Amino acid sequence: MLDINWTFLVLVVNFFILIVILNKILFKPLLNLFKEREDTVKGSLDDAKNIANRREESITNLNKSFAEARNRAKEIFDTFRAEGLQKQRDVVTKADAEASELLEKAKADLRSEAERARKALRAEVDKFSDEIVRKLVKV
Image (tube, rainbow, N blue to C red; front, side, top):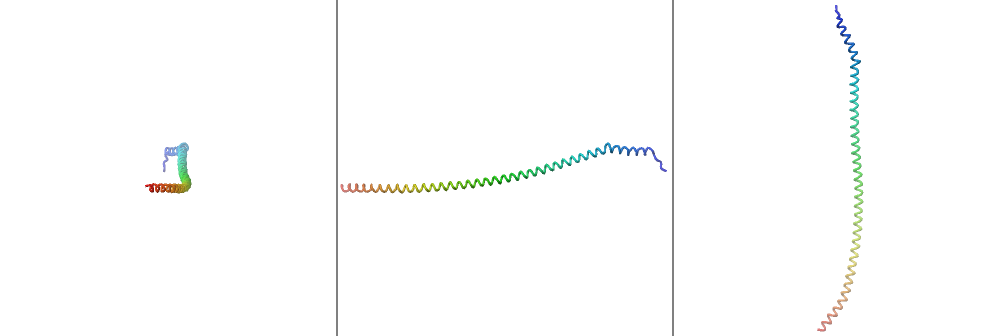
């Protein structure tokens, strides 16, 4: 029949007792430590992903804000430019009107001056012609 070796049986019992003791003292705390570490790493990775997502959203919002500000600035610039061009047209129109008025006034002054000069010359022409006739008749 089977011969049971008591030392083998003692070794098996010792092995199981040691497994139970090591399980309570070493394996469970190590497994808990590894689980906590894994949870911490997963939490850190999730936090990093959330931070990266928020950063991307912030960059997108910032770019959107820059685009809106650029568009507003362009609109303001275009408005001021249109106002400036209108003022320039108004000033040029006013200057043209003043120049035309001054030109017409100068032309009128020249006409009147020319007419006065003609009248003065006619009076003198009569004197000169009388004088020429007298000198010719004397000769």
